Length: 242
Image (tube, rainbow, N blue to C red; front, side, top):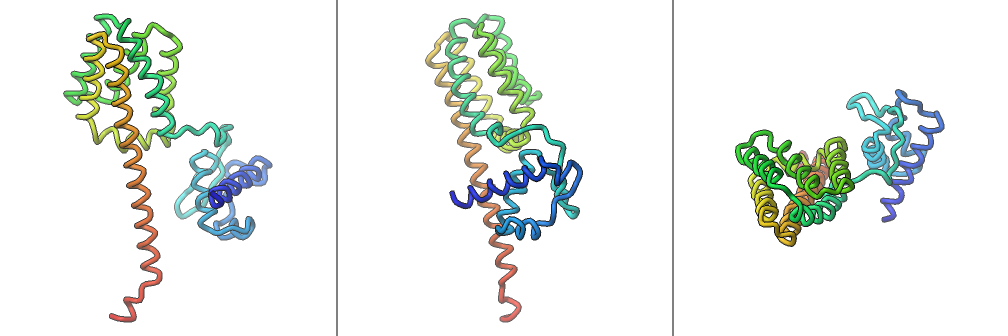
């Protein structure tokens, strides 16, 4: 936690320097070594701060050139929503939406849902079919607030770079499971079974969030391996014993 606080402290300090005009949009930040000396922290801490600033869209890292300040879009760390937060929120809202829709959905809407399932099974733009499936259910609730909430979830999923990257890594690898889960939701709605519809939707998102965790763990492990390899190369004694 101490390292985490230190890392965010550096982010805040650099943001203040940017906001004060010391580093205006388009300018280049000092080199990593200089920043480490100025803030009296390690270079790895500076690297973590730069990564965070890049995610916040305050800077752009240009390989071989440096770190450049971007135009500020007034975004704070509190407003960054992770793929995990989004998926949990979707599960809570869309689970209840499915339960409600089971009592209000029309035959026409069921037919439209069935068509999205056909598209998924045939691989005809499955991501678009997935989105339409969830929006049809939210419309079937006859509750505009639920429809607006689900629509905003999808806007965030389609616009947030971090969320898009996380979802891209897991959704395309599980099209068959996704289709099966959507079929279970559809069957519960067709049977007008609110409890089953809620459970099927929760099952769908539970599998998704677990896949996100697995992908995150794999990425972290790969980074550890990369760093270990670099350290091994740096301190290897193989050139002495060969």
